[in-house]
Image 1: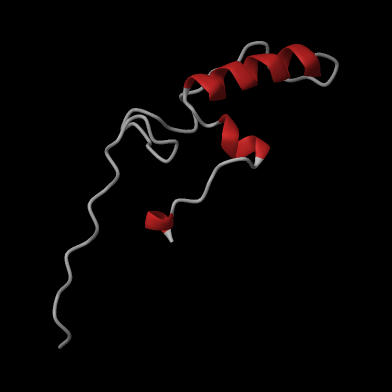
Image 2 (image 1 turned 90 degrees about the horizontal axis):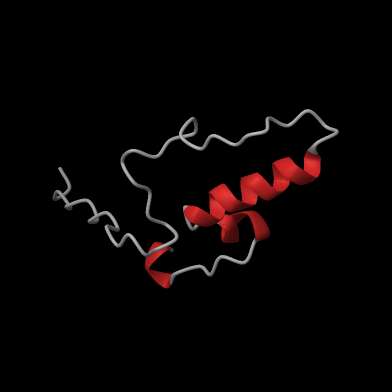
Amino acid sequence: MPPRVAPPKPNLDASSPYYVHPGDGPSFVTVTPLLVGSNYHSWSRSMKRALGAKMKLDFIYGTILVSLGHI
C-alpha cells in the first residue's frame, strides 16, 4: 500500500481571488433585474457589480493570473 499523503491545506486567504467563502454558492448572488434580453445593459452592470464585490470579475474577463501554487 502506498504511503498516505496529507491533502493540501485549503487557501484561507480571503484576499485571494481563488478563495470561496463557505456561505457562497451559485444561488447566493442575486442580481436584479433578472435578464430578459431587452434589459441586458442594466443586468450586465448589476452582475459585474456583484461579481466585483466577490473578487471574481477577473475570471469573467480572463485576466486572472495563474498562481504557480495552484498548478
